[in-house]
Length: 79
Image (cartoon, rainbow, N blue to C red; front, top):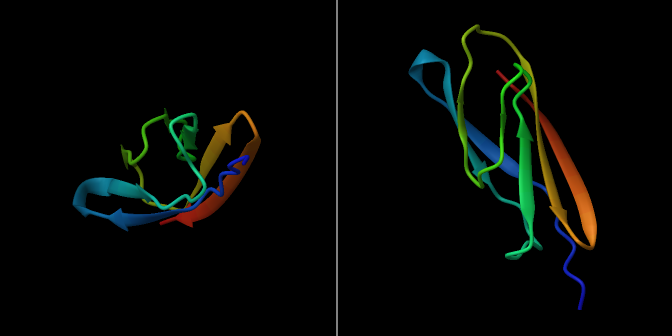
């Protein structure tokens, strides 16, 4: 059976512009890779990253899940 990932995440804003991201994607396995774009020029590839935003504002943050069968993307505005 082919496993198709569905990208999903939530986030928590902490003092100092630090945002913790929790990957809630489903349909993933050990072949799934994760690519984050935080909207401020920073990127990440861990499952549950954090990012420090140096300026306050709205940032279009994207999680891309990828495995040999499928790529799926979710974008949320982080503020």
